[in-house]
Length: 200
Figure: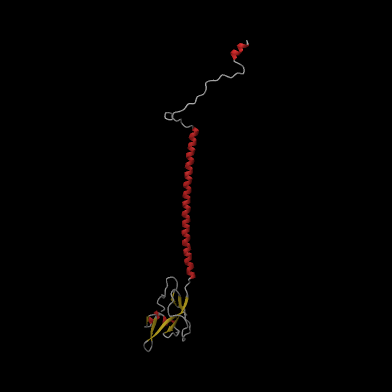
């Protein structure tokens, strides 16, 4: 009986019967059609494309922002340069403030006269005189002419010889007489010229 059991049920504890062994199949790339990507793969690809587009957009925004910042800096630099130029010009004006010079009317001998009008071109011409070479010529009561001219920067009282100064008009200076008449306005662009028709 034991032999029958052994024959029918197999040996207790013996190895289990095994099926056929698995086999590996190789696909031919030239004849095999690629399979459709799964839904998860499609989503992953879409997300990768979107991420790449976002990175490109961010890079473009960063480039535009950098260019705008550069333009702003350049404009500020140019603006500050112009501002500094104007400040320098104004500062230069104050640093090179026109010199104040007093004009003293003298006769041909260098004697200070009491009337500044004798050195004023308008006055001289309105009284029959004329000007030539920086001199004013006024007609004298007995005939002939008396010469007058400005001394610039000198001093003295009427009837005395002028002390110091020069008969050459200083360029760029503010020149006025002791009576307050303006002979020349100083500043940029003035180089020995006279204000109006006054002065020598």
